[in-house]
Image 1 (spheres, rainbow over the protein chains, first blue to last red):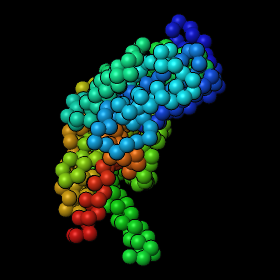
Image 2 (image 1 turned 90 degrees about the vertical axis):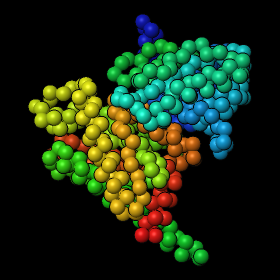
Image 3 (image 1 turned 180 degrees about the horizontal axis):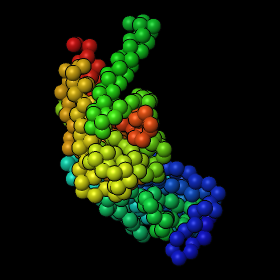
Length: 174
Length: 206
């Protein structure tokens, strides 16, 4: 994993990166691999890290609520994704009380006026993710959400370092 | 129905769907040609079903910078249309549409946003009217929304809307360009599953 210089994490020395696609969830244990939710718009990336067990999990949440929807096996819905993420990292030895949770995404991407209700999904996703985390009696340590810019969220599974990047700017430590 | 018959009708419905979409897209691309005063041709058209987790890999990957125009499809069925360009291409399109010198636009100011939106509007309206003419299904575009960001970020709200109905996403990816490739872009159609059903059903009854 790269070094931190002036708050900027150098990702160039990372050995490998695994993309967490829309509605997916991935968990890694003590490996020099970075989990990444690439190009988050209205979606919310959730990173969970246990610094003692060195277990990292990431979910790419797409929609706020599974109510009235068909069950899914991944992380599509905020209300299902959060308990599942905690369960999955727990299965690898992470303790809920040690989890450091960071989230990014949930933007409203429109530059011009947006009449379509789909452009409200980002805000709803953020609210639903925060509520689901609260229901687990956990708290979000850092979040970078809302606004109208897309983001990429990365979490290194060996160091727990998290970074967020937006188009045209260097990555920043989250 | 025998399996052979079933396979034959499945192939036929897939061909009809491809034909309907291709007709609509050809019309949309000709609309762009009319606007810029140059012939614009479709160079690649691929209707296919992808796992939702892979949809943001289209357009050169989720972190590729794009300018995108989103149009919702409204009416008897719903879906989404995204017209996407590399930013430099989008700026050149703005210059062409506003009769400006090449290279004069380098950001999306209000006039450029409005110009891009109008261009998307024309392409969406041409696409949907061609589908309507072929099937009798009444479809309209929502007002255009222009975005400039990472491809994954501009596409995910539309994908989210469709993912509520399932994990597989029907996409129609089209690449188009002028003869000298000064303009090349992607016309992406993300229909809700009902849109395909309604179009095929009504086409059969025509």
